[in-house]
Amino acid sequence: MKKRFHQIDLFRKYPHDVQQEVFSNLINTAKNTAWGKQYGYADQLSVKEFQERVPLSTYEDLYPQIERVMRGEQNVLWPSKVEWFAKSSGTTNARSKFIPVTPEALEDCHYKGGKDMLSIYANNFPDAKVFSGKALSIGGSHHPNEFNGNTRCGDISAVIMQNLPLWAEAMRTPPLKVALMDTWEEKIQKMVEICVKENVTALSGVPTWTYVLLNRILETTGKKDITEVWPNLELFTHGAVAFGPYRELFRQLIPSEKMRYLEVYNASEGFFGIQDEPELLDEMLLMLDYGVFYEFIPMDQVDEAEPEVLTLDQVELGKNYALVISTNAGLWRYKIGDTVKFTSLSPYRIKISGRTKHFINAFGEEVVVENAEAAITKACAATNATITNFTAAPIYFEGKSKGGHQWIIEFSQQPSNLEQFTHVLDQTLREVNSDYDAKRQHDLALRAPLITVAPTGAFLKWLEHKGKLGGQHKVPRLANSREYLEEILEVNQL
Image (cartoon, rainbow, N blue to C red; front, side):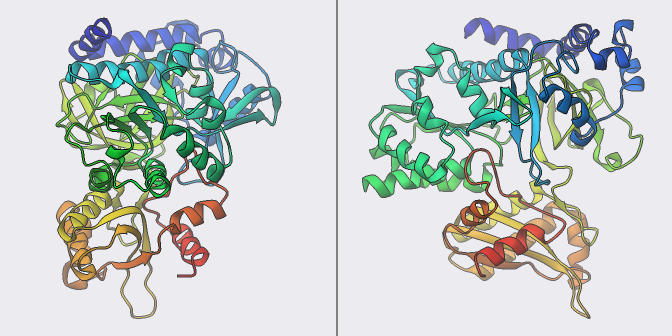
């Protein structure tokens, strides 16, 4: 771990050299693939030539090539044999995505990220005893690829777990056969039965699902809080959704001064960031030597046919960028759909600011996920509330009535005053988003938010109805249409 930390320090100091090396390795490795031949990778392209020749791609653009790989054709996007595909529903599209997981992506990106996470944690906390017990993680499941039964598809967590080396598997709980069960309700119950008997020192997973599991453990054991179940618990590594709205919730579940939280940015497409400084909440070190070459599109150009695409040395602090990646999984200039904001340029640190398609802009207000989560967090703090889930969508103009936003919120602890909660939510949105504020002036275009309080389990009920219970499926925070919101209202008869 100490050796690896010196390597991390190297890309902190020489980020552009490291990214150039990654770029050269990617191009050279893929030069004889079908994709590499199409775009002349053998010409030893410069970054500028690469940007001129190779188009920006969405999943839909790359899918014809990915389908060829899924049907068993090799050397299409990447030369290594592809036997695994990470299945992702996406968060703005109901159709599943299948991301190739090459041996290089697994070893040099996903596993490297997991090891670096522990290296950084141990370096920051020399007194850590996390290795004295087991790590509990909630995995997904995998199944044969419908195009080719010799390969398999599943949540990236399931792909990683299935391929863990024996030493790593020995350090985690529950056993693989339970962790990879595809029946969510049965899996949770089995996890509770097994894991309460273990010395769990670390948790990892999506906050939403981890919260569900921890609550089930308290219900089953009758314990007051999680410290009575696992007194040596000290670390929760979390990702996929912003932790701000959940922070107080977990403090209540795990009221321990030694409990620490570490954010990571891992996705089906790769592992990109790790919180390297404990006090920098929501900020992560951009990991530059994982076989991922990064580009960035300024958000004001994201919908343009030919946007300006920046490399790492061209980005600026505090601006929103759509993330573009080229990877050792054979994703080329792939628009992942996430937006990031740089909080530091030396070293390069980012925070996830939202999704390119996850926003509300029905009235020119341009509210992004980052705004929504800041507002929810502040409203919870002001009214002593905690939430388990939320989503928001526009209330469109109807007749002479003004537009607005409707929020469906599931509280684990109700606000002391719902009216005050709504006021703080609204005021915070006005503070962090000038466009929203302008529309709210004198109720010009937007009326105050409408809060619909959902009963316990409402979002899980909706996910179950959609066939997306468990794994890495998550609730869309914002949508520019009322599709998701109306479905949740209908399923729960609200």
